[in-house]
Amino acid sequence: MSLGESQDASGEAGWMDDLARMVLTIRAKLTLLASLGVASTLMLGFEQWSTSAAFREAAGVMQVTADAARNHMEGDMMHDALRGDVLGALLDESGGAAARSDAAEHAEGFRKALEANRRLDLPVEIRQALEAVAPKLESYIGAAESLLRLVASDKAAAQAALPKFDAAFKQMETAQEEISELLSKHGKSVEIANAA
Image (cartoon, rainbow, N blue to C red; front, side, top):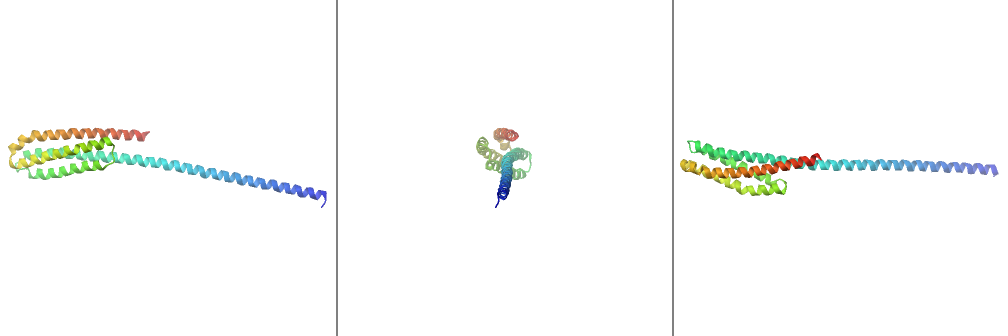
């Protein structure tokens, strides 16, 4: 092989080496670019997942708070309905049988509303208030039932026992208001936390 052919072969080999390096460099750049794209997509996906998880958690807390408020309002209506049953029985000339039946239904509704709230995942302060109100509820229901039985046998004695029932009503009313206040504060704190 002559000197000119040797230079052509080495020039051709150098050009081939340059082309191979350039192809590898483009391949490396494309691989790096694809890797960055996959990493960015994964990061965005994780961000979206964590944001939606936080949103689901906040929605769950808001749902529990709404359920607690609904149950509490239901209980409060039963509280007033029981008083209406007692007062209606005192005015009823037929002995208050219908009022006793209604009172049993309202007492059961009140118990169910309180129990429903006791099962919810609420803050400790609210759970403690719900536990504390349970004996007052039973005392109030007992006073209503006692007065309703008395109406059937001795209206004058029932009228005389009305102040004791009213005291139980007011005690329950105060306890209900305290729970209402706690639920309201909790609802506002949930709202503020979700706005942040």
